[in-house]
Image (spheres, rainbow, N blue to C red):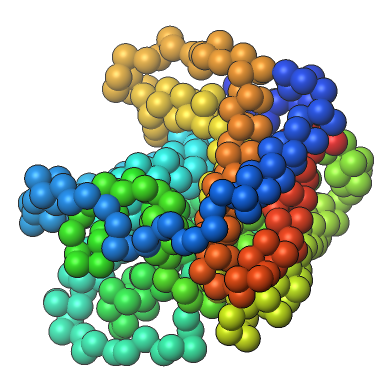
Length: 443
């Protein structure tokens, strides 16, 4: 994360170990990862000839869990917890010391606990942010209090506000040189809350489902969760691949996934020696300009390669239509894998810092949890172990993506072109795997 300078983690940032941490030579890890993805594709081509994933019709009902999850008390407690946590966060961000996160835990809470935490919580429990979202609670109260008439959300907006919101957030996190400033974080979150509270009050809950970038992101990640809703509304335990297969086919969801993928690619690029030498000695304006261009170019690269693969694939479909919306959900596991790879060590160590700083969040001499003498434990995992987790996350994410894409292919492609039609997307996924590991190694 650009600009991060917490004293105990300035070297680690939220990133990855250097290439010296890799358990094997970087070139070998890169080729091996790409080979695994390619092997998976050809194995599926031989063994998986008919569609097997059932989408939202699959899963075993869990009535007891559903009664707890759908209970009014559960929903109320989650909503109140969301409002309370937002209030505490904004209080600390606005009133605590503005020292680039050295003693103020708000930036760590926001970037490590909230943003990165959306992935494991959504993967384990489904679209949890929709249940916690304090802005839904506030807007519901305002709509009742002010008796605001419900207005229909314009269809042309689609998911573009969510895409724009995520892009702004990722620019702040990865490009903005004051990203670690508690006041900068407070300003972004406050403005974000005001915009979405106003729009949510006017348009109702549909606004958050399509326009709140964090809720849309959480819901996309949750498609790969082992817990989900069946078509009949039952809460079920399911194969995560069935959840991915049941992702709604909506064209404007593709940019959301592309923005997240592109941002993680830029995150890796910005740690390379090449990028460091490029921005070395630049003034603040140049630094921000280079970072902005770099972020947009990497996102554009992901968009271009994916759309090119889809154009080459189109002629093999049973129906002549844009296959992008059908295959965009298959990129979700890749986004998850990249997120784990690029943020794992950050959360492992900076996440601890968030607990320690919470001991005295306003720096006024508190010792709330008796942690005044505690320090971050950097021995939880070795550099080699961290690198194994990161490389495995990238490779596993691509393998799951290939499986998901293959099942869609045998459903959508002409029988005589099921394998041949997948070559463009397979080539892109192999390139993403190799590129992701290469950036992970700092090449």
